[in-house]
Image 1 (tube, one colour):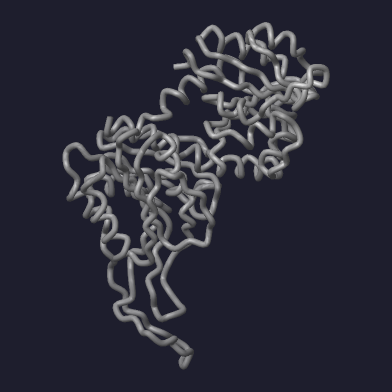
Image 2: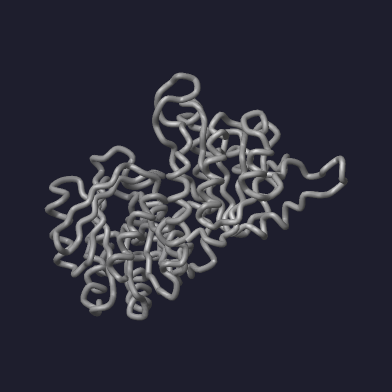
Length: 400
C-alpha cells in the first residue's frame, strides 16, 4: 500500500525523535517517497543529516535558507504529500495545531495540508494525562486528524505509564492499514441516523432524551472519509458539528419525521446504521398554546412512536446491511439479542449505562457488538471516533 506514496514526515522535539530514523527506513523499504520537516528543537535529538541520508531527500527546517536565499514552500510540500505524518507529535505542537498557531515550517505545512494528517503523540506521563491535552486531541479528531494511540511503558523520566510514541513498526503498519481502508466504502451508499427526537407537548415543552448525536455523527464522518456517500438523518441537538463533504444531512424533529426520512432513503442504500435515540412515546394530543400551571398535576396520554428500525428490518433485502443500537440498564445481552432477532438486524451495538464513560453526552463510549450468529465482541472504552472505526470495520464484513 505504501509503494510510490509520498509521505511527508514532521518531526517535533522530543526524546522519541530518535525512533524517526527507523520510521524512515521502514517507509523507504516499502517503496514510499519520504520528505522530512523538522522543528528547531527536534534537531537537538536527531541530526538532519541522518534523516536526509535515509530519506534520500533534503530535510526542511526553516522557511528560508539564509545562505542560498531559497524559500521552503510549505504549500508545495503539503500538496506533494499523500499523507502528512507527524511523529513524534509533542504536547506543544498538538496545542498549536488545535488552536491555529503557525510559528514554524512544520505547522505552516499542516495548515496547508489537503490530504490526510496522522500524528503519533509522545510525551511524559503527566502531560499525557492532562485534561488540556485531551481537549486538544478532541479538537484534532474533529478536524479529521488521525491519531495513533500512545503506548504504555517506561518513559524517559523514569515514570511508567501511557505517553510513549508507538513503535516504528506499529506506525508503519498503521499507515498501511490507513491507506488500504481509505476508500474501502467508495461507491457505497449508507444511511445513518443520530441524535434524539423531540415529541412536542405544547409550543415550548417536549418529550426527549439526553442524546447529543456525537456517536452517529462520528459514524457518518468515518464512513464519508472512507469514500461512502452518506445520508445522515439528524435529530435536534445543540452540539455544533463539522460534516465531511460526502455527507448529506436531513434535519428532523420528531420520531415520525425520523421514520419518514429513513424509510425514504434506505431502499437505495447498501446499509443503514441506526444510532439515533428515538423517543418511544409521543403525546396523543398536542396543543398549540402553552399549557398553564393551573393545578398540581398534569396527565399526559402517550402513544407509541413508529419503530423505524423494525420497519427497515422488514424492508431489508438480501444484499443490504442493517445495524441497530441498544441502550440497556439491565439484562443487557439478553435484551439486545432479543432486539437483534425481532428487528432482523445483522448486528446490534450494545451500550449500558453501567459502564462509566458510556452513553449520552460523553466523548467516549464502551460497546459490545452481537451479530446474527450470536457472536459477542466487547471493546474497551474509547473515543467515539475510535468506536466509529470499530463499527465501520465490522460493517465492512457485513456488506463486503
